[in-house]
Amino acid sequence: MGITDSILLGGLSALAFIAALTWSPQGRSQRQRGQGTLRVLVAALSLSAAGFVGLAVHEGYTDRAVVPTQGDRPTVGFGSTFNEDGTPVKPGDTTTPVRALIKAQAHLSREETMFRTSLPGVALSQGEYDLYMDWLYQYGSGAWLKSGMRRELLAGNYRAACDALLDYRKLSSDQKEGPGWVVSRRNAQGQPTRWEFDCSTPGNRVCRGVWTRQLERHKKCMELQQ
Image (cartoon, rainbow, N blue to C red; front, side):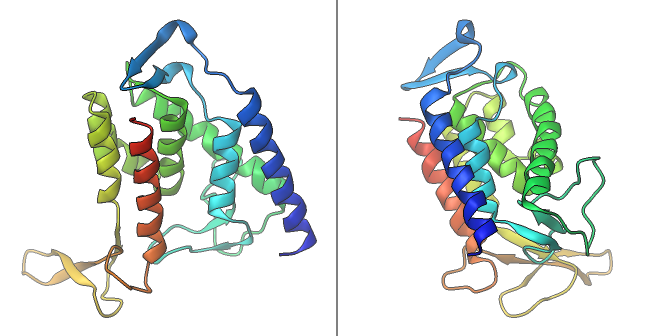
């Protein structure tokens, strides 16, 4: 790790510590308690500083656009797929640590507006809010709107929403990338047009990290239900 990375991660860690000490939920008049978890209407919440730091550290930093996993959009900085002005990140784009933080915050601000609108009348704890925003930042708003998590939260099924996180464990490609890829879609003539790989396949070296991250999210989500 270089000096710049050390300074950056040190600053992020300090911000997380301060956030943990000072954060207090908004919208106190709209609390509800569910199985020991203090929840607030989503409309009154925003991503916590600790949640932002955790997301940035988990995503990791790159100063040049990369494609994290087969089929993903190019990302730069802390996993940002969009620039500050809303334009998509392109291959060859570069950034700096400071610009990357600004870029990530701008991206998250747009996503948060959509996220809150997508859950009318739903209450979440701060931990749940941060967790689902972390997922949304990785998979995008289109995937969130069709997700099992959103469907279950709208129905008030918090544990089922946690379990739905485990549904997102596959890669998709328009060609067979190698062993373990199976046909997921065919055209009218029965010819394969889409393949997928299950990242939960034991011992795989294709996308094991995708499944590991989902397991971590699911574990944390279930702990928040206690």
